[in-house]
Image (cartoon, rainbow, N blue to C red):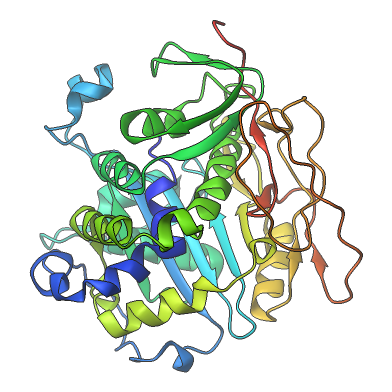
Length: 398
């Protein structure tokens, strides 16, 4: 079962930034469990020296921590002691003008996993073809970074990890996230039973919504990724809203909770650098914050697994390298719809009030064609933070 993007999105939009406001905690808490990334030199103290933008890998793991294991039934009762990277999000912040792109790599992506050494000094051999979510077991956060770096061809100097429990605590700290559910959603495996409409999710309930597979779309893991993007877009809007950023108590609570529940790379513990990353993200318009799924093809050796669609991915990497604005056109219609079941319209050109009330549907306007915008192929599924979308639940009581 997958731990999904809420905590990483907190880091993405403001978590690392508000953490900088309480930087005195870094020495005792945030930096105490920091992980060294193999084969990387010193990181410049100024992000302006990082040509080509900032790349940060955000990893969610399925560790069964004793204080939370009662929530997860058989998953933790039958736990083999392993810890897998079930969520893998590459955050890219471009050079000026700043744009933010978050690329989610499916856990069942079959790719080469390099030789890795874990924190106990044990070395695992290189694998020609393995599921991405085995890389953490082989060598911890460092191994996930090496694996994604090889797949993407990008240098990744920063990384952070969060567990199931961390997601619960961070979502509680932010005060919940409003999520639109089109048809209602019932999932006996996670205990969810939502009526159609907008629900503000916190803690355990938010985590279970992010983990649900049987309650959305066609029940596949890929549908769940699309469902998560609905959540992350709403989370991004919530974090940069006046409700959060203008409330010092919420900011400090979120900062300290993030610090206590995130394991960073050693390169990410410089408070000045954290503040710079936060400031770089803060003013990015919603239409320039995009959540996309790494493009995939069905694995010819196993229909339940996927392999990279390198041709489509090349178009994404080129756009990011050249710092071109992107437009996401692909969307998993089985997992993401409007409240009335229609296809979501294009994103608005500028941010607006993005918190719909119960039963209210906000219809964005269609932006004009813009020269220089790269329209990504339909194989790259996702959405911008400006788009108002709903999780396509299987139905209430189903």
